[in-house]
Image 1: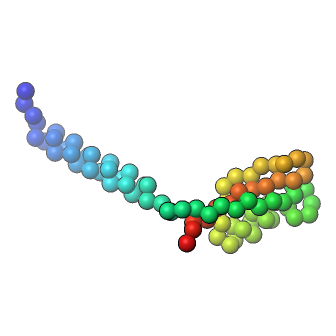
Image 2: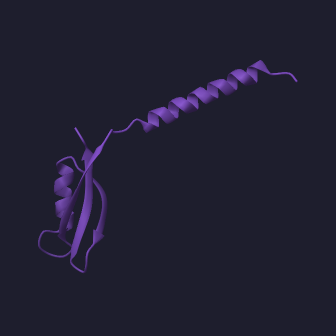
Image 3: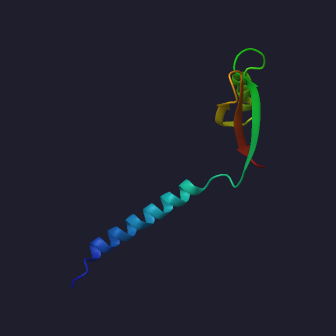
Length: 81
């Protein structure tokens, strides 16, 4: 059985590229801070306005859900300092 040196070197280089790529992709924030905001779907303090105000303050929108026909909430997050 003969080992092809060129294939071995190319395989090793490919493995290194994959490990470096995965390591770079995982490098994210250490911890998140979460906040739940509430608002109205119709009239009053509209949820979309509340979300936009928090985004302007550095929060990221995560998810939203309704609590009935008129009330709703949204989950916001930002990196902990």
